[in-house]
Amino acid sequence: MKVSKKILNLLHDQIAMEANASNYYLYLSSWCKVNGYEGASSFFQNHSSEEREHMLKIIQYLNDLKINTVIPSVSKPSQNVKSLEQVIKNSLANEQKVTKSIDKIYGVAQNENDHRTSIFLEWFVREQIEEEDLFESILQKFDVIGRDKLALHEIDKHLQKLSQK
Ligand code: OFO
Figure 1 (cartoon, rainbow, N blue to C red):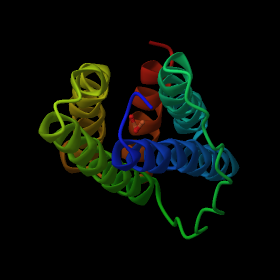
Figure 2: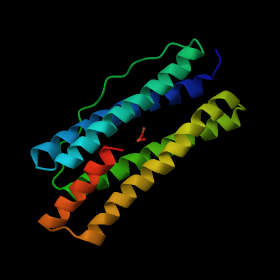
Figure 3: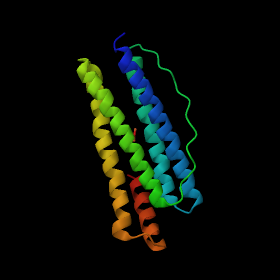
Figure 4: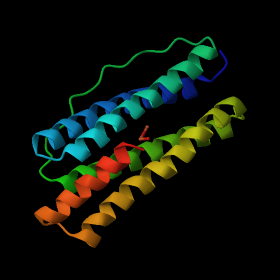
């Protein structure tokens, strides 16, 4: 096999993590829609699709090496969101977990001199810098603009713009 058992297990865990992230952002999109945040709902709908793309990238990588993948079942997200700010905070926390996980696999690949996996993961390392920056920037808006109804409407409009990029 072209990757070690350890790397294979870690990549399978990552496939599951991306699938769960996609599922979680779908829940957030739905919560936003029902609570009147149309922009945020579109933003998270797109983000859910992006996470699925991340999952597919890993599956494709393994398949290109002629390695079968196990497609994971996804877990039911805890339905505990109460505010738009919490939606963003939870998303940032999720991305921080993903970053840790990617860093771990990257470290193992480097220790094993698995250059092809290291190079493959570089895209994810860069993506996670962008992802954390994105959610940190949105979170800052609550301190800058505020948390009253008008401020939340402005933040929702900002998310709508982001979803069109
Ligand atoms: Fe794939 O975790 Fe966000 O990006």
